[in-house]
Length: 266
Ligand code: C5P
Image (cartoon, rainbow, N blue to C red; front, top):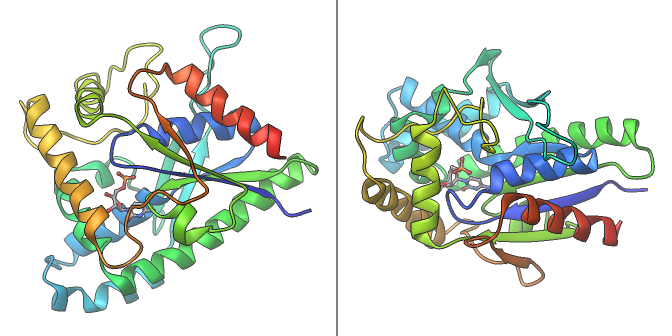
């Protein structure tokens, strides 16, 4: 039997990554953070001194194609109590180097949407996404022969990467709720409160030392605008996606709702 695929898409800071990791843990599925692959491509561009001018990026797709990019799930913090949700950590390796923190720098945050709008770069990333998903799937299927699967989050997973995914979720929240959550994550970085969904995991770093919620909202808006308006696989709601607006939803409820939908369709 073919493994089960859950695609989770949505705008920046809608909670896709922590939700997807928790759902994967709950179901015993593998997990791939597709944004981290675009972030590795962006780090490569920065390190090679490639600006966001289109002609400069011609060689980047080839560089990405040659790079060894791996996204691994690390055993996460133990649940604080029975029934508590586990959100495993993710480690990102670029040619063997742990870049989990480096790919969340302000420079990468600023440039990533421009890099991700490049067609040849997207083709190179697509190949990496599919091969990482196949590896994660077979690991999960080896452990759970009847119910193996993979969860992947991003912007175009349900529309372009896995258009036949068994379950597609479009996760959304109001722009202000997303900015406030990202701000909370950033200010608790390094000493994340117990119970915070992302405690202990590498977080995006703020654009400046004392950024306000408004600064962060502006940065998220800019990135969403680029993602929605690009030519190649823009951010869209797949026609068969289940839309979940989590502005007023607890993290637990949202994770259980998605895991239940997957179980119903397995
Ligand atoms: O998910 P994250 O915020 O880390 O993604 C960073 C950027 O990577 C996005 O703003 C988008 O430009 C790009 N991306 C994409 N397609 C995906 C995942 C991420 O274009 N599937």
